[in-house]
Image (cartoon, rainbow, N blue to C red; front, side):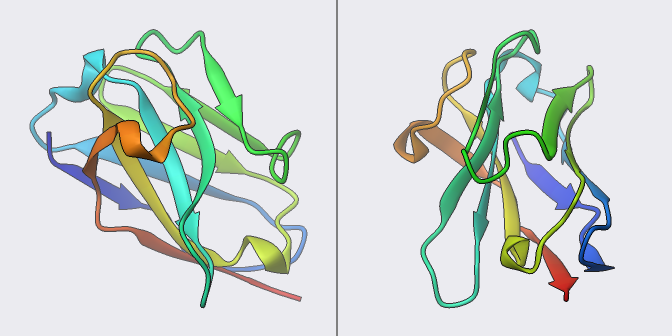
Amino acid sequence: VQLQASGGGLVQSGGSLRLSCADSRRTFSNNGVGWFRQPPGKEREFVAAIGWRGGETFYADSVKGRFTISRDNAKVYLQMNSLKPEDTAIYYCAAALRPMATTNRNEYRYWGQGTLVTVSS
């Protein structure tokens, strides 16, 4: 599994962005996948996760109702709406060893390089 996150950029408060996570080897279709973020000067935190079939999802309280995680056969997406300055961070996608969605960072084995999201006020 080799993950690559993309879609970050600069957006105004209230705007939207869609992040994508691709596996260059196209092997993560059986893995649970999560999005994490690391705000400036802070630790990496969980954002959202999805199971291998796409039917099971989890969200951090801070993004519920604004972010939506989804997947197809090739990619995992994070649709981010109503963005706030506090959403500014480097966003990472990660694949777990197991097929179910999980919020536990320690269960993620494979990590992408991250994509920067900056939300201006």
